[in-house]
Image 1 (cartoon, helix red, strand yellow):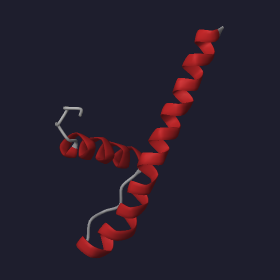
Image 2 (image 1 turned 135 degrees about the vertical axis):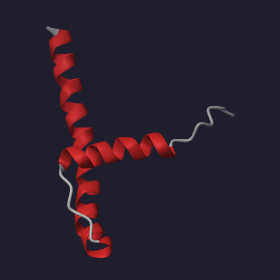
Image 3 (image 1 turned 60 degrees about the vertical axis):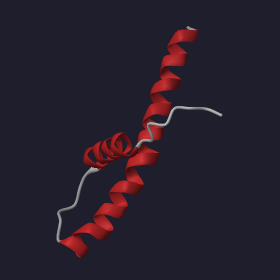
Image 4 (image 1 turned 90 degrees about the vertical axis):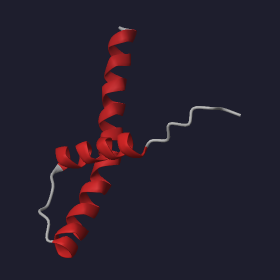
Length: 66
């Protein structure tokens, strides 16, 4: 039973983190980009993809610890 609860908690945490990352991106994009650059609005899945893509692009590759 512990593993079922652990999996359930992991899923809930994953969804919560995705919401915390994606919703501000979506709100900022939809609030600014259409007005400034004439771009279309985006949905939740697109905001999540944009967040993941930008973290891959801008992630520091410096792995040395001091």
